[in-house]
Image 1 (cartoon, rainbow, N blue to C red):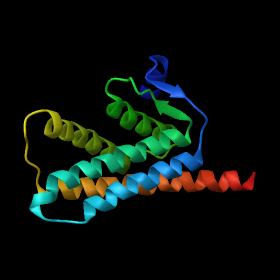
Image 2: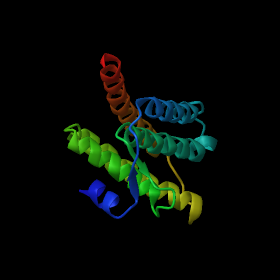
Image 3: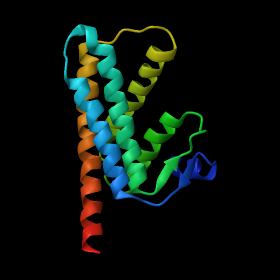
Image 4: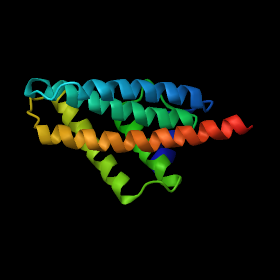
Length: 158
């Protein structure tokens, strides 16, 4: 599994799990998500796409935080590691159905496209790509929000 390899290779470290910090990260992700929904003009496709990517990536960070994991700041490919680790965690929990598997596959494609857009050759993005990123990010946020809520409920019962 990818997560074990990332832990063994030192790209991820164990920290204290925190539903409070996970909730804060998810709240930040939702702000990026909402900002991407503000304008549907062609002029804002690229910034909205980047905001959706950041929303999804930070949502993945929230899950890692909930589970007591943190990607090291000096890790190369930290975004890839974050997304792949979140996918692996959901798989371990038995929550990675075919629909979510497709979400993560699309998210990795969004990551690559965002990287090319930001650091490489200029590419164009379509409204359909933006709409797909919006749908995938929505699904991911809902799943992680549910995980955090369940953890918060468990913590309140202790």
